[in-house]
Image (cartoon, rainbow, N blue to C red; front, top):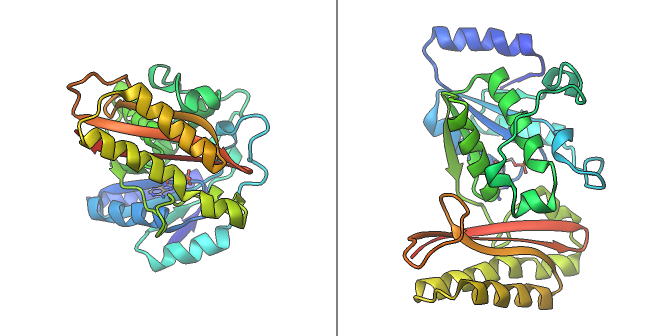
Length: 282
Ligand code: AMP
């Protein structure tokens, strides 16, 4: 595996790969890699001859007072983990490479429709940061395929929208959420949990699953189901941010005959803000 950090290095590699007719997959990450990220790399490998993993803690997707400074940076360990997989390149650009005119003068890519609610409402500017950096990483790496995790459900929808809207010739693949044995979705932010909080954390997923079961049993009282899950996670010690039952394709409120539902939640637990979702066919 090659570790590169400049545009020039990428360009050279790209020319070589194109010459050999290789397809390229990108897996964008902020590093601190866990099994969830590694599953994305494995999936990418199934869709392209060359896999580029990017590690970049993107300043523009963190809001005021969020955890940009504390965000765990573990490049040495990440490099070792990726070497054991079949990644071809680890791309670790610095801020100037990604934002050559500086952050204040950067062109912003924004997807207004899908970003008003949920994480977009609680984290103003977050999704603009995400789409802005992903568009840049796409332009730098020039992939044919890009893999994102279902764990960040709204994010992958926003990126799909951006890709179609800008006619980017890139296929977006969404990979299933990888969980700990007790159901907690793996996340770099789980490290912020104390031992006691860690024991409570799986209740978020459990409450989503409870809604999923009710939906599959034919219940359609969406607001009541959301409220009861909210009460359950609050009673468990979380400060809920949202619990929502929505149409999987566009996050609009479902009607009674909608057949693909996503149940999404975000909640604070101690220092961590945890998000999770499940998709239910009804
Ligand atoms: P991050 O480094 O947290 O920004 O995540 C990079 C990519 O990994 C995103 O596409 C995430 O959705 C994905 N991801 C994070 N956690 C998981 C997980 N537990 N399972 C699957 N994908 C994940």
